[in-house]
Image (cartoon, rainbow, N blue to C red; front, side, top):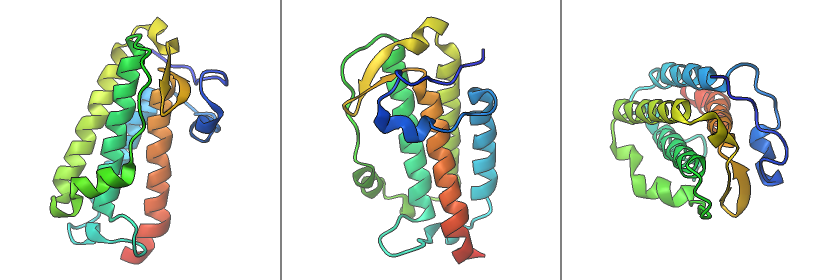
Length: 175
């Protein structure tokens, strides 16, 4: 199954930053590749290096990885609800409150990485299980209109953004 990129009208303008750049290739294959890339990148860090923050008040690498996992699960949950035809509005979440509650700096980096990989695998399993018609189901997340088809693309773009942040802002302070 190849999942076509969402078109304007399937999502509120506020989500355009996730979907503005056309994806080259199959989004589900790219999500698999991205998970492998993320694993390779984070395996470069020791547990103590993963406590690094590129500036005061910023997340550690462990916090950032936990954020990716939490957000992955949110996108998947939203896709499940919308894909199954649930039209009840879905709330947003406070990423900073989640990060503080997770206490990721006290967890081994390897376990945080296993958790992300499990969340991504579960996302892919759900995405591959949805019937074709479900992808155009409309829903509301965080007060904004969206279709189920947007969720894999959101997951891909969100993780890509944070991988770029790791390379640009965290790596220079560690290498």
